[in-house]
Length: 485
Image 1 (tube, rainbow, N blue to C red):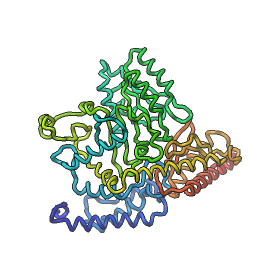
Image 2 (cartoon, rainbow, N blue to C red):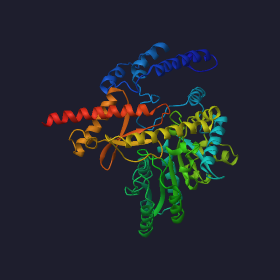
Image 3 (spheres, helix red, strand yellow):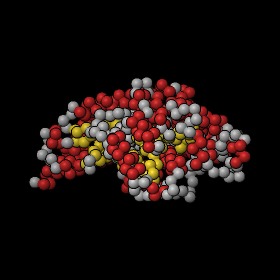
C-alpha cells in the first residue's frame, strides 16, 4: 500500500493518476449540455449505497469509472451558462492549478514550520486585500473557510472589544436582508436570543440609516451596549449594498464596531467601473471577503480583514507543542495566532496564482461583465409583462416572480396560487435539468432568483430560461384551473 503514498518514488504514479482524473473532468466539462441531469435523491442514493467501501477496487481507472456513475455524471455544473441559482461561480484555470499544487504539497497554514513560503504568501495577499479596501497601515487578517466563519470571527472580536459587564446587554444591529450567519454567530458567541436587532431596509433593500440611528439611540437609552453594526455589501438575495458612509458615521458617533459583510460585493474591489459602490468600506473595523464568490476562485477561499492587527489577539491561544509564546517574541509568523482554525489549507495559493496569471484587472473585468449582464436582464424583466421584478440590481442578482395577472393570462389572481405556480416552475426546471434557479421570499411571497456569476451567460440564456419558467408556471395554473372546474 506504500505505492499510493505521494513521494519521490511514486512521482510517476502521481502524474499518471492525476492526469487521468483531469482528462475525465475535462471530457465531462466539454460535453455537458445542461447544468444538471435532473437526477432525484431516490434515483442517486441507491447507486451510492451499493458501493462497498470495505472492498477497494485497487485500480484508478475502475475507481474513476465508478466516480462517473456516482458523482461526475450528475454533479451540478456551475460553469454552465444556465446555472443561475446560488452564489457559485465558475472558476478560473490558474486557481484550479493552484488547487492542484496546494493539495499535493499539503502545507498546513497554522505554523511557520509547516508552511514557510505559504505563510508569507497568505500574509502578502492579506496586505494586498487590506490595501484595496483602504484599511490603513495597521491592518491585518487571515484566510478563512468562508463568509460564515469570517463573520463569526469578526463578531467575536467585536464582542471582546465591547468589554461589556454582561453578555446579555450586548446588541448587534444588521439589516433585515443580511446573511443568516450574523444571527448564527450571535448564538454561538453566547449572546442573548434578542441580541440581534433587525433594521428595516428601503425600496432598494438597503439598510435605513434613520432607523439604525433610532435603534442605536434606544439601545443607549435602555442601558444596553451596542456591540457591532453589520453592514452588508452585497446581500445574498438582492445584491444590495448598504449606505456604508452613513453607517460609518453612526458607528463613529456611538462608538460601535463596524463590520462589513462584503462576501459577495468584494468583487467591486477589483472592478474597473464600479469600485465607488464600496465607498465607506475603508472606515470599517472588520471586513468579510469571499474570493470564492466574485473573484472566481474554487471553494474555499475567503478572508477576514481587520483595521487594527492588535484585535486579532482575541483569537490567540498558545500551546507548547505548536506555537509557544516565545515564538511570538522571536517574531516567528504563525498564522494560527490569528485564526479560529488550527490545521488549515493553503487556500491563498489559488488567489496568488490567479493574480500572477490574470491580474486584478482581469478578475475585475469578469465581475463587471456579470454586473452588466444583470442590468440587461433587469431591463428584460422590467419590460416583460409576465414578470414582476423586485429591484434594479446593484451587483448581479435578479429577484422576480411570474405573475399571470400582469400577463393577462389565466385568471389565477390568488397570491397563494401564484406562489405555488412559481414554486412549481422552479422545481420543474430543476427536475428537467435545463436550468437551475434559486428562490426566496419577499414580503411573505415566493419569488425566483437569478444569481449571475458566469461571464459566459448571455441575455439569450436569460430570455430562454424566463420562457421555460413561464411555460412551467402556465402549465401548473392550467392544471389548477382544470382541477377547480
